[in-house]
Image (cartoon, protein in one colour):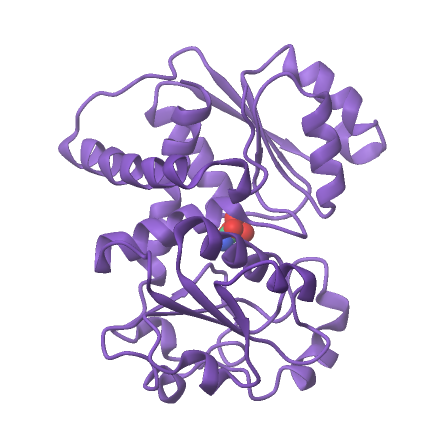
Length: 297
Ligand code: CP
């Protein structure tokens, strides 16, 4: 039994196989072929935080693969009323075949996974968002070929998306340059562990000649109460057309969405020809289907 809490839970070969399969599943869907490998299987989706893309991708994905998905909202279930996560894991493991969790506390996800006897998927935690990375790498591969050996810039908050890009840099073999304001940088120890990851001083230095530019909101879910202070701290870290012009002429721009136009990105950036944010969001469906198929094969 395998779980997917982090990109580091799979080998680079398995991750590349998943990306390949996501592209294949997208083509199977487009051709209208019947493909129901998960007939009779049920996914329980526990969400302690809001979601549009992740939830709809899992629910639609299970349906398209012949299975079924159940939405379990944290606040309206016992999960959000203090029942120990280990107890929830033992109970749900007897009823469903696979469980995804979005939580504010990565250690709760790990505790749940230790007690579960079915595969567990990280649908985003305060530490990592590995499902998003599957869609991002799929999107890059579809547009530009393998991301191995390419240069990627992450600008903004050194939080769960930045952490996931650091794991991706090591697993998929690309160079990652990170520019975050002081106080919002990722764990230096993690950076020091890798030859692929470089913390740089400015967004301009990070973006120069890169093949892919990434950013995320400056106040992720759970940080709304400090949004105003963060606007000041992140001044100068907005990604706009001028900053993107410093990247390679074939560079792509991605954003996991939802975006705050006028904050981490300029108002028009998602409509720039270099932005592939909409395809990236659409690929959440195909990459999560590949993940479900892999874990339930
Ligand atoms: N990018 C992402 O995870 O989107 P949702 O919060 O809508 O699921």
